[in-house]
Length: 202
Image (cartoon, rainbow, N blue to C red; front, top):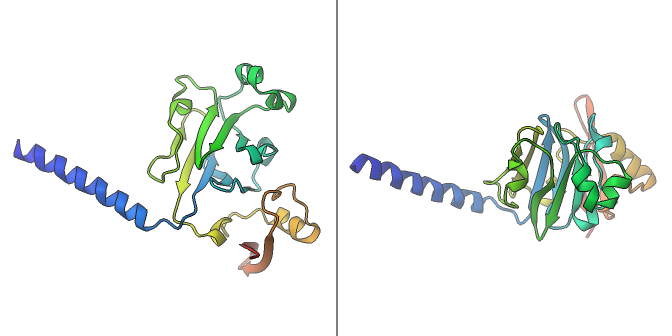
């Protein structure tokens, strides 16, 4: 009995410690990183709704036209029957979207529509916590929350969609970065690839 109580108390203390550590690392920014088939495809600032679409094989399956309303559409492996969504979402029907609908509201992100055998993904509560990711296993989609990134880390160096960044910097094309109109583009070179770091003009 003593051993069970000790294990229980240790678990509680560990959980408190993890939460305290997570809180200590927070920077005031909350980002959602969306990965599909283990590949980062989209990153969203949960407060400002700014976003980055990454240059992957799936970029044409990501729809961000309604980002200002907190709505994003991303691919899902088993989400192919869109009948129920089309009944309530004319934009999705008009664009013939096949995939998962994400909703960002009041600083939280949730899965608003998906198709899977148990629908567990859609039943998960909205989250803004790094300790509560959204996992859609049948659809091979995972949403991780980061609260320890600073503003100038919004776009990671390692997987930047640099072709579209160059396009933005040269022509002010807002197709991929239309919610981030005050970007200053600083060019850096890292070994054999190019990347950019974005900072806000204040």
